[in-house]
Image (cartoon, rainbow, N blue to C red; front, side, top):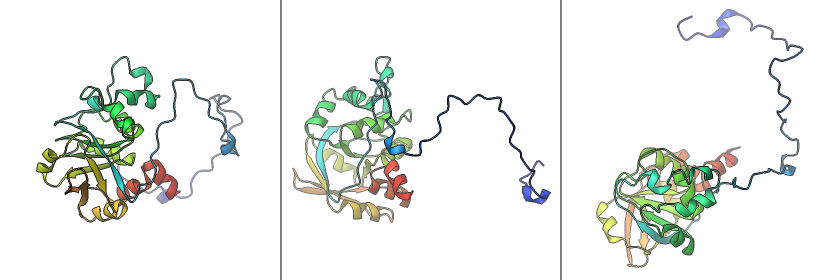
Length: 239
């Protein structure tokens, strides 16, 4: 018709009958099981389940695992060279190379401290939109990234995986943080809910005995995702 048209204007829909046979052979397609919980997913040795976060706790704490400069790319966060490409389905292995172009000791430090926070500068997460740049930090227990600003798609990927993407309300606070400073966000769930309306998130630096404020620019749906621990958990809850 050349314009948006309502098919109801043309009367009753046609009667469709099923053919006796199909040209496409779907014999190799296995129909969903009536008892999916009993199905074992068989994976090859280089295919590992990817990490899934847990619901946001009311108190989020951890150490500063690394302090990074401006314009950290997703290739810094999760390198993608010829040696690592064959392991794209093996996030636990890839995580051992997370942020190593910027700090070779980062993966070991993250494991030793049971996760924590990444501190970044301007435009953190620029470059390609690879999801592994969020999956690898999640595998290492990263709970939040505090940066001066984020690349838009990477920020969305962090939220999808339940990692808090915080920006300094006062960029001068970036210079006041040091490696292995102990940070704490109290009443985290309520603070995330309030962030939808523009409220700031208060972060305590337990090591230095100070506090600073961060912005958390999220929608109501994204708040639900962070509270649930990521998009997968949020989708299950909504279902």
